[in-house]
Image (cartoon, rainbow, N blue to C red):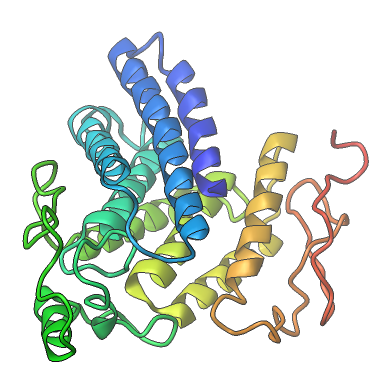
Length: 312
């Protein structure tokens, strides 16, 4: 994911920054960086396997367990070492990044480990047990997708009466992390990270964009509130337009990448015939170093994102 790559850049930079002052904190940040890179690879593998299988079912058990274990370890490192050691007064970016990473790990836990499941990605129940409680892209998850609904349907149709051996009624990941509903906690972490980012970072700052981009994805994938996801994406792009602060070339390129992702999120769930709207959200080569500019007319595909002359 684009946001995770940006988080990894900040992890490496901030770990170097605090190395002399706090070697322990620096080593923990480097551990989280390695963990994040490993976890990103596992998530990409899981997504590729779902595409190859042509389904949205759960990944193989060993991959599933590895994803949950890495996420749990990331949460422990943040909670025990990073958050107690970092204050806004000392390092604003690191404090915001810590809350953002906390939200990111809980986002993964919600996708792959939540009880009741909010998506078919991590469910280990009979097929159809999750979708009873969801109307993806049209409403908010109500948490009604339970084992009972799927089993009842299977019984009435003469199919299997329960999960396959080793997959229930308790999740096989229960020994790694206590089963439960982590969605409210994940949402709270995102809101805290966004509040800090809005208070201390300008609109085109890539860390602020990373927080909001992933929260927009979380709203769509886990909360199943497509309208709120599109609204957040649109508002975030507007904030990038309004930002006047100067940024370096690297942050400019990161902002361009995330604006492109947000532009796609603004159309998510609307169908292929919808455009980004009448305000012309798209991509363009014009604009200053302070904020990446995007322009798009109806029925046009986004142009490649490139830095303006003199910025490379």
